[in-house]
Image (cartoon, rainbow, N blue to C red; front, top):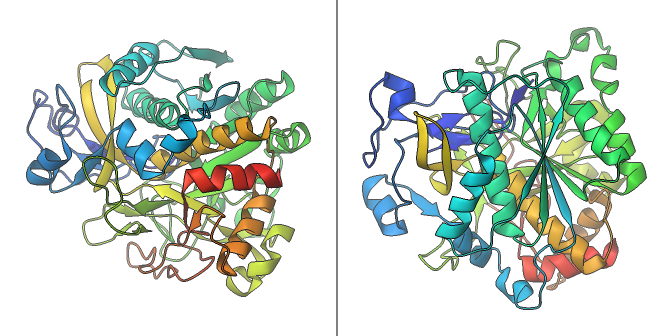
Length: 462
């Protein structure tokens, strides 16, 4: 398994794409204001979501949008711009901010400075901070800032917490930390699943955000048609279903392909990853989002795909393990007899990235710009928390309601809050991907959301 790649305009993992810092790449002192364009390849043990790729040093403060465009040739957004971009402010004005709901974030190792860093992030954007309740599962080793595996996961943790809080500032956040890194295959997965299952059984959490995953093909027995090593890990999702907990996962950052067992080579043909391929999970893909300095949309979102520079692409495709679930019957012409991924998409392109703040190590001490589906998944978890608040209860498996809304939107309904994403594809690394077409597709799912419309609409179906 591996974490989703993140892209930081600095690092890489399954669903987060971050630009690597100048220090991490060269051993030089961190550049506080200079952008270092460095090729950001996938980092083997970085949280899954399949995408963290970035190339910058830390900054003493987040750059403005115009500064990012001039200095980094990229757009960059803070919390208030994301909230405006997804039209959350009308909900906030009504007191719908996630209050009374809990988002669970699950990452290996966690970050030793997560509370301080969230406080700094929140103060920067004028939103109240919240207490991050840390739950350690098993033996979590002491944090070592020279261990790139641990720092990669700490970056992932920061992205997950900051994005969830930005979108649902009133929600509680529980961070479950495990002591074994998730890479390809089953390494680290049992611990992650056990941590989730423990919280579910304790009644903790309404929505779980997972920015990590492993290519289905890397699970032991896959080539022989034996999927038991993967299927035996589904116990947490089955308990989530029984307890009405919503489970989300990043769809990946390598487009239609993904990592082989070595964690760095990409398959030369289409593959998908688990857990996003699981029918009990809602898979979140990535989009390119163009906003102005106030967070207003300048153009419709497009599917994230940056094959020319190796910057990643929104994960999507057909599962080899799971057959088409009932909720995808209406899109059988797209998915065939397989479970199709993703289901919905949110901001993921590192070239339209998001700011986070870290202070856990000398090479991770300042503001960094990130992208990847490791951003998209926690962003959507905040939207789900708002919907749970409106409903007054957990919404559970979101896919049935989501596909019902998608079908109504495609039929012409204007109130669903689903905005279709069309144009482009998730072709990547020479592997031909799926086009983003009208309605459901294997690059963006149903598209993206307008929260003010989507939140009450999905709440009503739950």
